[in-house]
Length: 567
Image 1: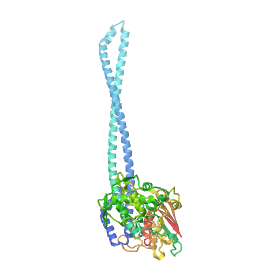
Image 2: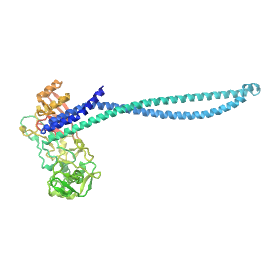
Image 3: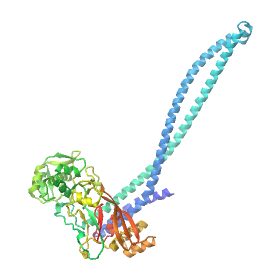
Image 4: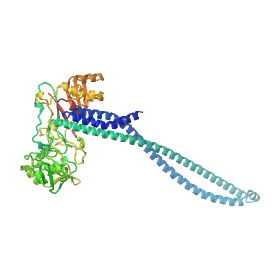
């Protein structure tokens, strides 16, 4: 009954997913300037899907174990069958030898029985005692042969019986194994569909978060000009003590780290070293100077197009410029499919302003003419971004299509044991956006500082959502009636609802600590809070997700690695 209920939950999800997709579309259309309600709506569905998937995964693990056990039993029985069959063959061969010997003995017995009859033995006075001994001995041998044959026949029957029993048991277990494999296949299929649906929802959530981040006007690369991140540690919000959440780097963290290339060039790395630092298993090959189509500029040769790319300052070190040229050339070839389609001129592709940028950039283009970053002989989509914040990720890590040429990189000159080490050893540490709190409120001196009560509210929201997933549509920051977030609850309502469900809400947070983070991959594992209600800890990704829908204005955490500053 429990299994039927779980499967029913999944079936219900698949029956309503089209309608839910329509709900998301309606939410996006109705509230184009505020995606928080839509993100909350998706989070709720993902949470419910997880609740349905986890029991099925546990059941599938149990069934997988039983299948493995059944397979082991079948193999054991097959080995027994092989052994019994061999013993039967050996026994039958022995029986054949005994049969031949027995036939010879019977023949001789028949002859001797005619020769040595009891009457003849009785009448032979002189030889009677010897003949009697021969006759008695012969009878004993014949009796022994008969017993031997009888025992062989009995052993043969027992072996045949055991073989038949093993075969019956083997067939029974095979039936059980087949049934379990059928059940496992069904559960695996349901889990796969649920995971796929969850992936679609997660992708939509990332898309909506990206739209939220767009309000921050964060540049993807340096093509938009100098980075303008501010250091909120130097800003007084005007309300005393508070907390600010600083992210390392800015999206998207995939491929060549422009400020990282700058740092690597400054310590003597050449452009090929830099390329191999950011792309996985690639080669550098010469490709012909084809013609490509550029939006608004018409057709031109690839090399002339590169002269008008404005992605990094011409004043940067030559090896960093060369690395950027190779990334730009490779990206253009991949994006246009070797000239088959048009390439845009904004950060959506790569920034092109026409003409010849000149200076060091022109020198780098000409010095690397035709050189392309390839994988298996094909130009790669050589993504790049301004500031990775000491860590790059694969394209799949951030929700893009997985690729084998992107990779996770700890972009530092030496081992890392603390955040302080990142500030000293990260190759992109000179970027203004290496460590920054994103978003702001005008009334607090255009800063991202939050009051202790505002941080407590985010903590309470997570605690409440963990108690009752059905309330997530009330947990957005803005109090509007969007489809996915009706009757948004304020601080006090969240605390009341948490108390009603047996929780202890916080009024103030006194301290926040990144208690555990992955120093090789650059992700917060655990974040901990202490306040008037005691302590609370959450997974880093969980806190980030709720923070980005509950924090005021457009204040956001824009990457997986972040820290907390207190004033």
